[in-house]
Length: 220
Length: 134
Image (cartoon, rainbow over all chains, first blue to last red; front, side):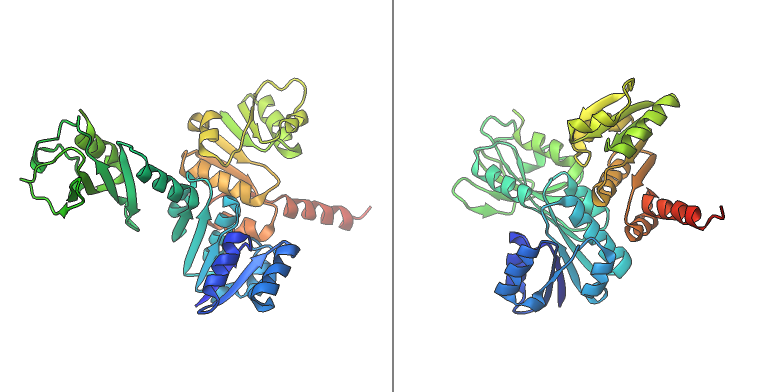
């Protein structure tokens, strides 16, 4: 694959370093110091100096034959611009954007960016998993749909404790797929499966029903 | 109309003052407090310090009740992102965006933004002024 990376900061550099053994990689970077550094470390044909948001620079970089563009600068607005121009003007099949402000994730997807990676969200998910938090943790978003897989720990005071799955007032569009008991044993539940305190429930839900699902499993 | 302007440089400030004279309710947003010095002394609109690319900031600036939004900073990419947030997140009907790079301007216009390209307009005026017979 031919991959163009926008931005030779730490993320861009390490990404290119991981990719360039198996793929043709070209990094676009404005800063002379970073250009020299990457040329020294990875070779001068891996890096080109220029503004990755500039269509003329993109053309010189060969954007029209790129299979994928990864925009990984520290500025969301630059990453969005790179991806939008790459797709609109050069018909690049896949565009990946790094996101710094987590609020931009939904918008970027809506604007046609194929994948987004938000370090802030990833770290938040880890922190939430570590904390004794009684809410709902989104684990995975299913691509192209507004469905996600979420984890809910059932608190001992929840109304649902001691009741069966069929008695849970699940919102439309939510489905319990797995229950892991406090000893770590997973089971696929039926309507007759009882829910116990400190069970971990994995469910698929549409994003809008997240709050009702959380209430169904955690409300006292 | 309630108008929200991001970027209080010379252009943003001048636009804010013109719109206020036309009787509109204007809010200007800038990350630099000193930028508000560009506004005329009698400006009565709201001045707010903050980043117009942040959805919470835009909400605090009244984006939910804005009839129009203008992105007028010096950065094309900042303007394009803020304008797309205004349009797609806040569903503001009239969204204008200043894009200095002529190529980027065309691309964003094709993507449905109302774009203004000062570079092309200025070059056009300069050409007319140079080619004009005295």
